[in-house]
Image (cartoon, rainbow, N blue to C red; front, side):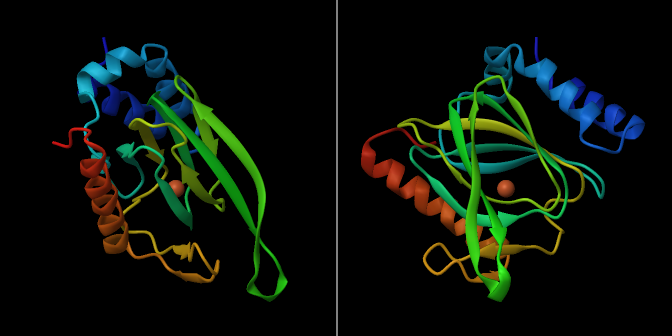
Length: 187
Ligand SMILES: [Fe+2]
């Protein structure tokens, strides 16, 4: 049975032992062996959201829910991450910098339910929920996700700009407004 308090404590203990992503990834992978149990504990996703489950200077745990077909623009984190899907799917596109400030897509990774996928600290990625229902994922970051200075890239021009957390909040709310028009319930 997934217990959120125990899970957070286990992640913190693992991270105290090993500051890389590896030990935390094992904890997350263990929890993901029973994704229905996570779903029951966190609640069936009803709206797109970024919910903090734990936040400290060295470790952040989020419950991220993507709206159906939602795409989030390219961004970086400047810290390692582990993405664990407990319901639905994510497709990630990875981007690399080219001379002259240009960017190009450098690879992709499909992420499925029960998988715990590590991302390196310098990764630039965009994320798509490719399915017509909400996707729920636990994201673990090796730092304070909300305090880090980082970048995002314009979806149309791929121009780099300073990451704007308020824009992200607005983007998720727009996704929820779109959800309402589809007739799906939004809490
Ligand atoms: Fe990300």
